[in-house]
Structures are given as structure tokens and as C-alpha cells.
Length: 415
Image 1: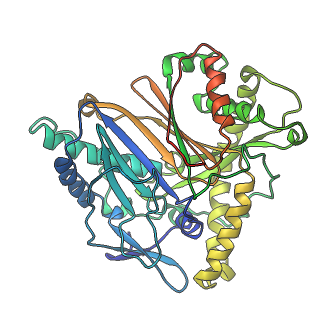
Image 2 (image 1 turned 135 degrees about the vertical axis):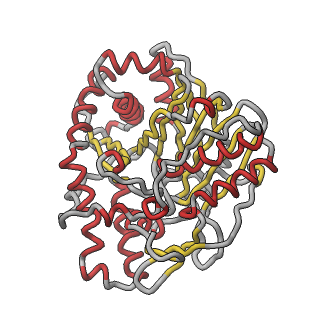
Image 3 (image 1 turned 60 degrees about the vertical axis):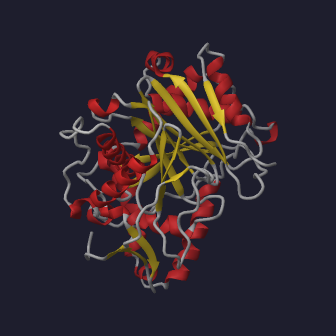
């Protein structure tokens, strides 16, 4: 974690800091729904205990001359009943504030986290620590021997793994072709609309297995088809591009609680109509090629190289922010949808008895879909900045046309 009281933020965090907007707050939400109503006072105590377990979350982001840095803060988290928008703004420059918050609604516990602090893996582990402390208080003596903590040291948890595992300078990938965006008109008042889509795992997983592809590839191909279905004829030569965040802990021996992921992209230009049985194997092969160890190392090194270029390193922070904001805008043009697979949730068995489900969302300038499964339920958490929701409807229709029963919840928006 560097110095006891402060440390420099990592490269991914710098990108998030440079590109925060009122719409895309760069906040992610992970939620856990229990089988009983939440007791707010017990949840408050649980969050304080979890915060002392994870000092990496107890920080305030400050601006220096050449870089952003994080310093420890004594600000205590205060649990509230959910009343704000999903993925609220949790970073305001020069404002003393925590960059995460915990809310509850009925049986659900929500952890909202500014993405500069951690990624999906770190957020879910922190949420599970909160849930464990809560259940220990709710059911005294029941879960005393259960642990969520990975056993990593404070230094390991606070490590900047991008810097730690950087090997050799390289250039990031070349220019990409502008992708088709499933919607042009954005919602007013900086709104995002959120959809929660539930699909039975035992109905969809066999369909992926039948054609020998991963569930990630199957869902991603379904998104491609849902987006293609709404492309006007004149734009059908544009690529449909799915961006997939990749957990780098699967490639490097890191136990960091901070950000440690990179993105890969799979692109398809439709020259004819395709079924999911035709498209998903193509997607799966392209994704596997991108996920080769050699390619992931190249992508990671290419991204971290920027930090080692003297002209960038010595540029004042406002210049760095402008450059990163511009680069983010260009990168956003090359994305049709982001699909982030948080995987099968596996809390300890004794804790799982009390849990009904998990879900997750991420703010975005693009269509963004998380996916996670628990207890036989595949949950897609979709956020969209667009007035047009045809792509989401097309996705649901694709599954219902297969005879799969899909449940959808949506937030209200003002149009």
C-alpha cells in the first residue's frame, strides 16, 4: 500500500478519475439479497467492522501536481435506506468524502463503489465481508468460524499490481473502427436506466454447452444479435463490438483489493443474418484468442507503458486529465456493449443459506451488462444511457423465443 497514510493511484483509476461525469459517475454497484428484511442498526455495525478489515476502502482521493493519490481518512461510513439513484456520484474533486457507500432496501444490501477504488472482484469480496459480519450479529454464535478474507497481508491487498507485474514496454493496440451504438438519443437530466434480467441457468447453460461455447460467449453473442436487429440498413456495415473486462488475477499471482483488470474486444461485421448457434462459436473462438496469456500480457504491458513515457510522467495533472478524457472518448466510440462477467458467486456454504441472490450494475456512457449467477439464477444487470431500449427488448425476446422464461425489472426514467 506504500506509505502508511497515502499512495499513488493506479493507471486504471486515473482513467476513471479523468472521465467522471454526472451520467457516467464511474460507480459500480454490487448487491446481495438476503432471505429476511435488513436490520439497519446491525448493518451499520457490520459495515464498520468490514471497513476496519479493508483499509484500502477507507481512503480519500486527492489531486497532486503530477498525479492523483489516495490518503487514509477517518470518515466513517453511514448506512442509509436506499433513496438515491443507482450508481450515484461518489467522487467530487476537493471534497472530503468516502468513495463508497452502503445502502439497504427491504432484504437487499447494496455496496456502491467508485471504480477508482476497486474493481468487481474487490467489490464483491468487500460486500461478502459486510454480509458475513451482518449475519454474525444477526445470528450470534452461528458463523464465528467462517471467513471470507483471503488471508492476504495489508501490503498485498493495497498493491498496485499493474506496476508490480509490468514486464516490458509495448504499444497499446492500433486504431479500431467506430462501432455501432444501439441508441443515439441520450436520456435527459444525465439519467441512466437500469434493467435486471433473470434467466434460469438450467435453461440457458445447456444451450451454450450444446454448441461447445462458454456462457459468456453465448450471452455476448446474444447481445450482438440483439443490437444487429435494430441496426438500420445504411449502418449494417458497421462493426458490432463487445468489450469484456478481464480479471488479471487469473493471469498473475495478485491478491490486491484494488483495480486489476484489462479489457478485450470482440468485433463482428454482419454480412448476413445469423443464428446464435452460428455466431456464438465464432465469438467464442475470437474471445479465446484474445484471452491467450501472451495477448493478455501484451495488452497489460501496453496499457502500463503509458505511465513510463517520460513526457506523460512529467506532464502536469490537468494535461494528463485532458489526454485521458480524450482517449476515453475515442475508446467509447469503439464499443457497442460492455459485458462484464462476475462469474458464479460462491459465498461460504454456511453464509449461502441466508442469501437469496446477487446482482450488479455499472454506470456507463455505453450499453453495459454485468452477468453473475447464484443458486441457479443468471442475473444480468443492464445500464443504458439511451432513450431507445430496443436492444434490451430484442435480447429478452431472443431468449423467450427459445422458450426460456425470463423475468425483467426496470427503473423508471423521466423522458
